[in-house]
Length: 490
Image (tube, rainbow, N blue to C red; front, top):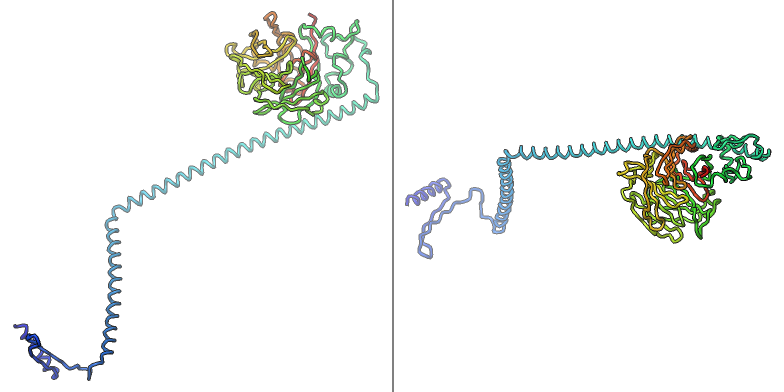
């Protein structure tokens, strides 16, 4: 009731102030008491029309909607700021640890990259050093080859001059020699056989063996024919006769051979050659005639089913016998049918650099042929590096008999067998070497020798005896050469 009194008092005061206020009290249709209070507008003389009122209401609604949108936007921004503030407040203690871990990871990455760069730098420096070393080696080899080429050119010019002179003048005959030539002497005529130019001329102009210019015996036959065809001791080795020279670096050392017991379709002229520089040696060049061999035109090239090693191969009774690479296995390869016929491992034999000759080249196992058959020269741990000889069955490569010598294999440059006697050569590079030891399998004894042996080209990597031709075949620093020999009477 006091509220109603206050409301009536306010209305009365407002009505007195405005002087136009009116107040009514009456019951409505439901019987309830209803008070009505009206005040005149101080600025409007009359009420606006309905359309203007609606427009005003719409304006108010639009303003209200805009304000509501602004309020919602402000609330969203405020919520975002509150969330950010919460994250900042709650993560304040954790941020230094996370930042430290991130920095540590980046530091580790940078260290790894630095180590990789240092490794690459070292590898590049090593490669550069290798290239510089290879360049120096190639330049040295180039200078050596140039010097050798100049020397060959001088020798060729000298040979041409000698050929011209010989064509102009008549050569002296061997019978015109007035003084006797002692056996074993190297002065066999008034020509100086030590002169390299003469030897080159001899090898190019004639196929007559050096022994043919020796003084004849009273019977009319050369002494070499009387004394050299038995099975006595080796007493003389002639000057090397050059047949041909290898064309490429793969022929620095190798092996060439003829079959002392050739059978159809091969003849005593058929020649085989193997260049043994490389890691997978399989090619065997075959020449039907000596002329093809000297000119370098093979009639056939065999490709072996297994690679061979070093310079110890031989041809005997139509088969090639060789050591398989990196093993102590011997192989028999039939040339006519191009098939592998037999293989056998030599018990305990050193191989691939265990007991080579002094020049190296994996010459641990060396095959040989003489008048008595097929041999193999090698060494074992049990023999403590001394040369061991075994006689082989040429069909199945069984070891028929074995001898152990007192000659250290690595102290000699090469070896060959004549009439069951092993002979060794003292040096592969000295121009004036010697056949320095002999081991006789018939008596089981050895002896020292001093038979001169010439390494003309200063790198003899293969020396074999051919019992049919009674010559030594050798490979001397790219050059394929032969030596005449003489044996004492039995």
